[in-house]
Amino acid sequence: MDEQMQYPFFTKGTRELLQARVHIAQYSLPRAKARLESAKQSRLRLGDSGENPDNHVVKQAVGEFVLDCSEIGDDRPLTGCSFSRDASMLATSSWSGIAKVWSIRPLGITKIATLKGHIERATDVAFSPTDNCLLATASADKTAKLWNISNDRSLLLSFDGHQDRLARLAFHPSGRYLGTASFDKTWRLWDVNTGTQLLLQEGHSRGVYGVSFHPDGSLAASCGLDAHTLIWDLRSGRLYYTLTGHVSPVLGVSFSPNGRLVATAGEDNFCRIWDLRMTGELLYSIPAHKSLVSQVKFSPRDGAYLATSSYDTTTALWSAQNYKPIKTLDGHDSTVTGLDISGDGQQIVTVSHDRTIKMWSCNR
Image (cartoon, rainbow, N blue to C red):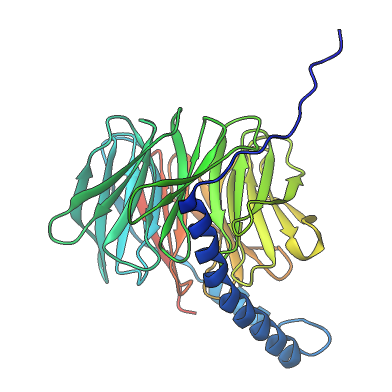
C-alpha cells in the first residue's frame, strides 16, 4: 500500500493575528531602513576590504573577561538567566520552579525578589527589552508566566495553551509579544498586554527547544530536536528558510545585531553560523566544545563576538570576524545550561547545574 499522501493545509488566522502582523510590519520597516543605512556607512568607513581595523582591539578586550562574582542561585540546578535592559538586574530560573531577581552591584549580586508560581521546574527566564519591571518565565508545567517585579512582585498573566513542557522563551524586540518553545512540536506567539495566543506555529517534527527574534522584529527563528532551525516571516507567516546542517538537536539560536547572521547551538558539539543574505547558507561550522552546546548569543551592542555555553562546564568566546576562539570562561563544576550578555557587551552571566550564578566582565 502506498504511503499516505500529505498535503499542506490552510488555517484562517484571527483578527488579533492580522493586527499583530500589521503592527510588526510597521515596527520593523523603519528599523530595517536604519540598519541598512548603518551597514552602508560601515562599508564606506571600512573600504573595499570589509575588514574591521579594530578587530585586534576587540579580541584583546574580550580576552580580558574575568570572573567578577559567584553566587549560589538556588537549592536545585539552574536553567536560565537574563539581564535586564539596563543590566542593573539579573533573573534566574531553576528546577525548583522558582525564578529569582538579583540586583547587580559593584561587589556582587543581591537577591531582591523570589517569584513562585510554577508547579514544576522553571526552564527559562527573560526580561522585557522595553520595561525593566516585566519578566517572563517558562516551565515544565506547560505554561509561561508574566511578572511585574516592581514593589508588588505580582503575577500579571499566565500563558496557557501548550500541550507539553516548555523549553525556552523570548520577547519580541518591541516588547509587545512573547515567543514560547515547547516539546509539543510548536512555538507560539502571545500578546503580552492581553495574554492572547496570537499564533500557534507548527513546522518541526520533534519538540521545539528555542525561539529568537530578528533585531528588526520582522523574523523569528525556531530551533528543535529535529536538528532543524526554521526562519519565519512574522509579517506574512511565510517560512523563509530551513537551516539544515546539525546532525543532532539544536538547543539555541541567536540573530546577529546587524540582522545578517544566525548562530545555532547543537547537541553535536558544534556552533554553526548561517548567512541570511544567501538564502540561509551555512557560512561556518565551529567545533565549539567537547560536549553539547546548550546556548549561543551574539554580543548585542555590535556583534563583535559570540558566546557559547556547554555541558563540558565551560563557556567559550569567539570572534565574530573570523570565528576563532578568543577565551574560555572556566569555573563551573557542572554543565552550563544558560548564558546572557549585557546590552553593552561588557558583562556575561552563566548558570549551571552546579547551582551557581557566575558573572564575568571586561572593560571594552
